[in-house]
Image 1: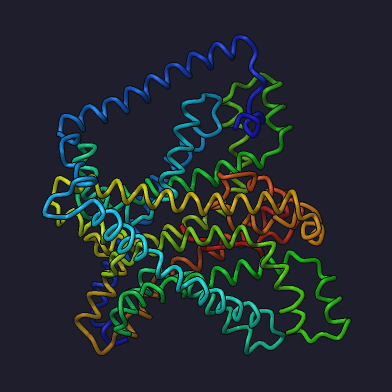
Image 2: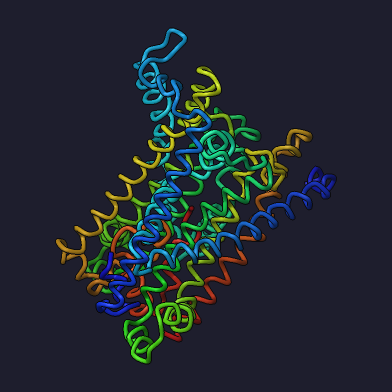
Length: 217
Length: 327
């Protein structure tokens, strides 16, 4: 454990980077995912087609490939150059996690009783009013536990950025163990605990919320 | 498509139809324009020049056979499939052991199994792979296998546990009452049914495995991504786009067919094998499957409805879920 304590500043820097990636890409993917879910339940054909095509493509693409595509494929093909490092990590993870957010939100929308939407429509609310004021607030309750599970996976996925020039926890494990070959096992255990510090509370809160929601239903 | 959206809006009348038609036209034009713009600007960067000929008439004394079969198929696709094929049986066996231990009445067996499951679900696969390469100094192939096994044994153990929990308690009681030991009951009565119920979730987990195997690229294992990179390094910078696109298409096709398989099996189970479904109390038997798979499966079929049923019919829904179900 000595090596980790000696390099506490590096570990702290890496830990905050993992948190920062998780949060920034998390917020962006939440926004983009909800928009995509809106596309997928909308009455307009082309939007639905776009939504399902997007989800099919990005859900079946490994995150590593997405990073590699942004690095070498996007500049010649789309003329889009994302700076290697944080910006690329946030972009790739937003595009990727949004598909899972979209699917969770969409199944949440479908979980709200038909009568709710019928009642909303019968009092004359429009599609957007029905969605925004009646369906989504109810859908969010059943969506939150699976959404937390999506974000647990999201936090762990930030480790992929280690392969693309971002200094986060996994890169820290690599660098510190290169400097201290004798302490490798302790270093990896310590970094593993850092991840568990984020993911286990998330898992517990998801269980707790699910229990609450289950009673309410 | 339209029937599961029917909740949100009425059957359109003449006005709404006209409005939807207008929007459909507008958005079709917008998307078509966007696509056209992408193609046009790509054309401006000379994307459609002779760089594509690398696929049928490659330079540097190579043949199309070398590119497609020797490189992409044998080295690339096989490189990606190999750790997955090795990892699946190992992960299944370890998951079975973990599941049995977790159901054990003895805490000294139960608690370590629980802790192992929680730990390996909570840390990134890539960290475990790096651990294999740096700390254990094993070959990258085995480091990839290690990472895949560590994570997936925990996830599969969770899936199986959810399947067992979904069985009516009469199954276990009947097994015990005819004189089987708890272990025999588990192995001969509960697990076979649990595996069957959770088959769709287990198959969609293969997609996660396939995607996670690409992490091997980062630790220096030679998989499909690495093959693509080797190819564009060899044939020169202009072919980068070509190989990146080929690799993406291959990944998407493989993963889509596995997802389709899962959906197909799930659909077949629901329609044909009423016996298994009957055991778990009607359609709810799909519930944990819906829950576990709702991150990779939901969009493909009717899984979302079973997820809902799971929550409604089973108050203990929180017990059955693939918590860290991988993205």
